[in-house]
Length: 369
View (cartoon, rainbow, N blue to C red):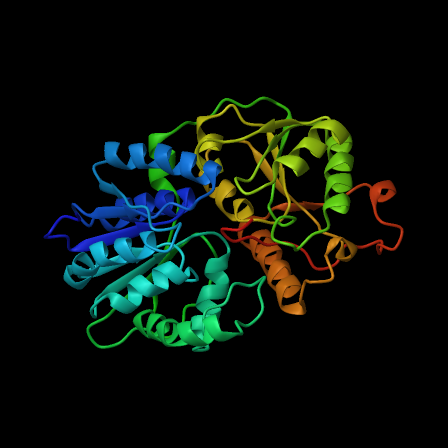
């Protein structure tokens, strides 16, 4: 059961969400509150969440692990167990407003304050869609269609209403991202002060590391071209370690080991904490993702340089929409503007023959990257 007098109830579905809940708590000082972890089914994500849950308990949080996925009965049981605590909560802290499960929880809550903490660069898309009063749809997916979407539509509308400021309900976005706040929404900057105070500074290796992305797994990038690009970058910049995203496939990582000669590192914590604990490369290369916004903050007291690798337009699959490529471009541009990062291109000899000399739309990340 959740603590009966819980005034603040936080929900985390990913390790990064839980990290940012802890950052928010450090800034807001809400006193005792309860964090409910709703783990995904992926092994890597669950492992990182268990490590983060231990850190959260050590920091003074009450942490509950609640299985909410798998089978026909488990989600219903979890929802039923959370119904009463949701009605009592005066403030909800959530990490992924696009999650259907969290939208269900929002629709069950009474009128209360809501805080949305970062779950990646999707926060930028969330604030934009909320400002337009739209149904929340992830940037790399099309508009929901079909019978299931129609059945869920009333829940989605109630969730948007709960995320819209009104009398008796404040809405706050706690973010490291440069966002345009919808009317009435408070934006609080996430400086990663808690992370810097608790971990590091790290030892530097003097070499270069690369941060992986799950853009291939989400169907955004072509796998062969991605592997060729990483191989070229590894040779050009002397990269030896590749920090895999928790959603990257074992098959693709195997190819990077063989073809690029990289040592694959599967972090057991969010990369922000891995970088603080070290050792970490003196330079970090990343395809556009959340870390091009977070790592400059996390490592602001070090000499580590972070660079963004451009994505050529021929790397995209034919399933990618203009909306998706535009979103990715915005993520890169905002990181360059906010943190003064440099951009890198992949070696010309490893580009597709059809690729233009200058890379086109690039960048991006959410919890999926």
